[in-house]
Image (cartoon, rainbow, N blue to C red; front, side):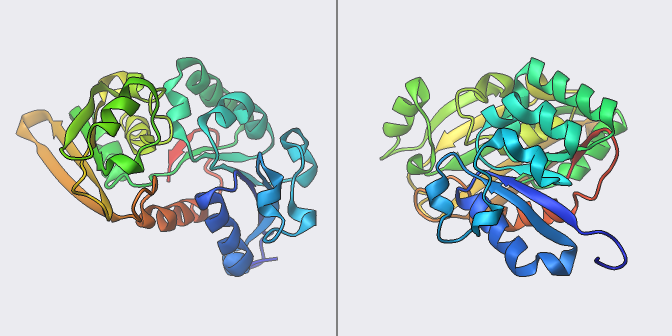
Length: 279
């Protein structure tokens, strides 16, 4: 028991850098926050052998119900939310670490409807999105008219294929705009790189994935950090611009400050009813 209340059991889906970070913090500090590990799953189970006790490793993701998690955290790939999100929500609160999955209209609709039906919360972590709650309040008040999210990284920090991948390869000597347009079209092209943009779309449902503009830029002069710029405009001449510099190792997809942000988001997953909740 924690503070007279039952501990919340957390299932971690994915054991990349974020999954490893969250798992270790729960192992080291979870008791201080009323959290304990229910399971950890990874496509390649061998990555967990030296760090996750055997009894906490989940062999088959379809067996997650056996572990009785209170909240399941996806930090793997958008396909997890698309394929398993409804099943997770039937049993627990669900934090989608890859909200680019929700750019698929059918996936977003199914998960929203399931959350409402069963009373569990679909959590969207803010990640590198600065001022997400402020954007949400502006949108809730009917004041938001336009929103642009610009993400600037070193070309080696992108995991892209196809046309965007070729553009990124050509940005080793000069700054290149890889994409500038609706976030919905960008998400399937860069599913691991634009989760911040996807979170902004959830924060501003009146604009959504079609109305929020995303600009993706490769800049070889940013070897040690990522930049996220937010531009919001509203009624009556209102406007606000922010620029967030997130330290990042050379070639890292995720900036270092985003790890702590995910932990804070997990601590906020205390059950907020059958709705979508930006945390």
